[in-house]
Image 1: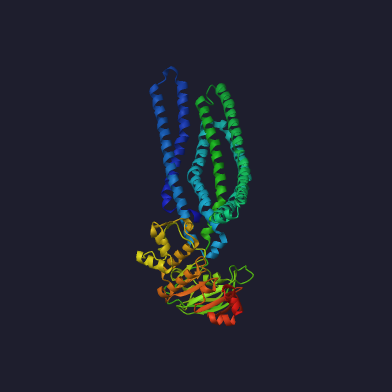
Image 2: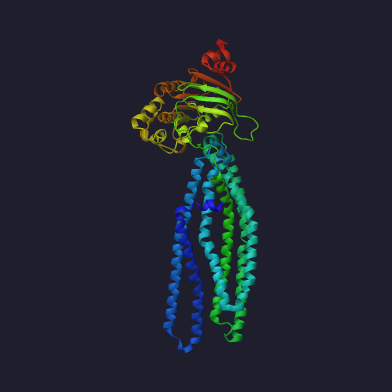
Length: 583
């Protein structure tokens, strides 16, 4: 897992290595400052009337130079560390995002959209913080600890044995405190998904929430999720707060021991066994040792907290899409013919029943096919198999006479345009949104496509026309306008197959008819599949499918189905004023 995550460091390896080198330099310099200070104190004490100010000044300048060098090393390390950690986080986000782009719908469903957002944001931030601590503090703290212990024994002799007792006690105490806090920290990150899901639902459904005056309910739901996270953090922080008194106890105990025993040794031996300078250095090294232990504990807490984030990110990076282009993939779609041969499909291997069962269907290139059926009849599921958004469980789907599993995915999907009922426009201008269909389309081609989709008139009515800014999600245009822009975007693609999944539900029947008429003149060779709730949207199709419970209940032309299919006839009667008369 760590090897896979560290692979995202890439071009920031140099900055990471420089951080380590400068941190080592800082630690070495800081370790020797108390030693030189102690030597200066001893010189002042022993020199008496023969005190040489020149030596004192030189030593003082040396200390200033060492402090400046330590500061420079620390400053450079801080810069390179920030550059390396932020660059690592950027690369990691890009790697996760690239991975998600290759996911099939099944992969996305496995994680959920909100969970993927949390992993891209909160979890990556935690990993960035952990990496920053590892390449800087996690190197500095052990070095300072080891150097300080060595120097403490060198200068204080047996007096440094106090650390042999205090260091293990403090280390064990800090470790126990951290271990008790970890379960609460782990629980927090799993609950972030739930919190983000609440936010996303509320923002997306803002109109519904206000329409039903459910603001207070949503506030309570969000508040409960936030309170849950706050409670876990509070419990964890309450435990971690024990670190401070434990640390203070050890620091003060060490100071009392060094001052009392050290003073006794100085007085009793006349400064032979231990002198004032050495005792001063012992106090400094003692504080450094205990502080580095505290830093190591903090590193342990942060790394343990981020370990859950590492696992969650690694899950995304190791997830393999179940839809990939085969070796020697077909890179040309001959035509828009479609063949479903004994197709059975279910979304999960654990599912008890098939979403589609026993589908046999043959569509010639250039045909217009209408699909009708009630909610849950798997109309959308059927068409999602054509661009291979899902793979069939049994049987095969062929486009242009070739099994869709044999195509290069980009080639196949480049020749299949889908316009959904829940259409999505991206933030940017209308022109930029339309050019998703064809990035090289001219302004004239944009206008032509919009005229065919019956969008040109309302676009022209905007002050900025085709340069009008679309807000995120297309919130500044109506549902019908959004659908027509998405149809125009699909037309610009000039695909072999065009699928309209109930994508004219928000426009009136007249506009719907004009859009369909535009298809005949603009893309006559394209196979057109129209999923609709209105019979009027499909009655002039070459072939109409009636779906029920995941199967094709009937197929034929409008007149054939009126005479042979009870379901179709009932739908037609309910939707036409002359239904009762025909009855």
